[in-house]
Structures are given as C-alpha cells and as structure tokens.
Length: 221
Image 1: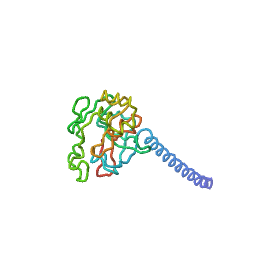
Image 2 (image 1 turned 90 degrees about the vertical axis):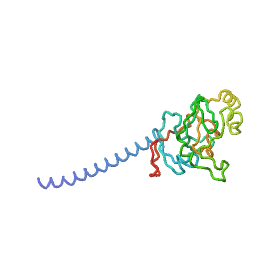
Image 3 (image 1 turned 135 degrees about the vertical axis):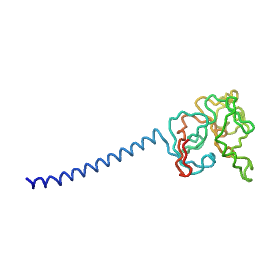
Image 4 (image 1 turned 45 degrees about the vertical axis):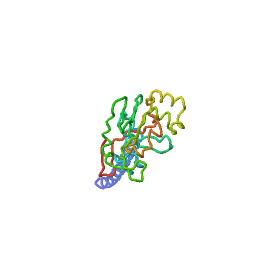
C-alpha cells in the first residue's frame, strides 16, 4: 500500500506542475489581451515628432492619449494628418464646431471673447533665432487672421476645399460642423489648421492625458 502511494505522488506532482504552467500561460495571454484591446479601443501610445508643440512637448516625448474623449477648447489631441496619409500630428484645440476664431495683436478671440492661453506662458519666454522668419519673436507669436480671411486668401485652403465650402466659412467665420480648428503651441513653425484646414472629428485619435517619457518630464494633463 505504501509503495502504491509513493508511485502516485510523483504523478500528482507532475500534474500540479502542468497545471501551474498552464495557469501561468493563460494569465499571461489574458494580460496581453487586456493591454492589446485597451490600446486598440481605449488608449493610444504615441511619440511626438517635430517642434510644433514646443516647449510644451519636445521631439521624442512619448504620450498616452485617451480615445473617445469629450474634446474641449485647450485640449491637446493626436490626429491623423490630413495632408500626409499614415502620419499623425499632435496639436491643441482652439475652435470647436460653430465657434468663431479671430487672432488679433497676438491674442486669440473665440466667439468674440478673449481665449486665455495660459498654456503659452512657457513659449512666451523662448525667442526665435536670428535665422528665423520671425527672428526675435516668442514661440507663441501668432500673426493676425480670421477664419474668413483664411477661407478667402489661403492657397492651401483653396486647394483643399470646394469654393462653396470656403464661401460659407468666409461668410460666417465659423468652424464647420463636425470639425475642429487646431494650432501648435510653437505658433511660428506649426503646420496647423491655418495651413492644413479644419480637422474632422473622425480624424482625432485621442486626447493626450499623460507624458510618460522622458521620466524627468513625466506629466499628467
């Protein structure tokens, strides 16, 4: 009897070992599945490329964006580049659908009211080099414009939109339904809605919530 017990014990140990590894593998697969589905449907992991959001974001910063977020003015978003298929931009939302947008004397007015841009404070302190078109101007410098003037005079907008669309924007000075007007914090170099036009809601990947790299610039937004 004792001999039979000794024979059964190794078999039980072997079964326990297989159960442990099967459970470990199943747990690992489940964890990867959660991360995969999470970043496919809930979050987006993105890397900043270029200077258009300096000094808020630098080239190479890595961020997490929340998909399906309720976008408001001042939010930073990751979007599909309308002029470069397969590329992504990171910009700040200035105008929501139906908003009027006017830039005058380096200030932005939305719906006739001054839009407080506290996020530009850091950029106010950084000047463009002498070799720049805007030599000596701060990163935050914004030339005068209205949506109406852009619709009337912008060659990029003329190429992108139908004349009937532009005439409506010229008449109303409003951000069209279903779109956003976005700008970069480094206003003197940013290729944003002033050039690429309005951003369709469907082109928005998500709202930036967290910069996790580099570690010394770790920030929740």
